[in-house]
Length: 177
Image (cartoon, rainbow, N blue to C red; front, side, top):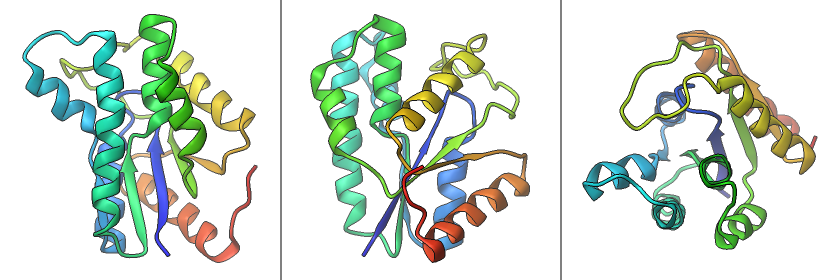
């Protein structure tokens, strides 16, 4: 049985790095953030409809990587990210994304804290809304009682925190909080 672990949270919180580090630690595969690839390839500013295509692409990449995973599959980004992105940018979310978020749950969510310094990237949009965005993620996960832990720390400590949460999950079977 493959355990799926979502790495989620606001921009510039180390999701991609953490997903890659965890996959190396557990000798398995991971799902990169599809939005980055998509936005770099479209050659124009994105529009609302693009977020739906990104959501579909993310799940398709996840399904593909699931066949290659061993023990765990680490997902850099998931439907909560696209849901919050759409709601913040456009004040609404496509029903397909909302439904996918409701139906596509993970065994564990690792919510990356905003304790890392902001790093500029032309694809990032909200350097001044980090706490607001973190609170949106935290509130969604809490209100839905999804199993999650907040990953904090810098450098090796951040990875170690995530590993401890996963080990706790694997051996104690964390239930929905």
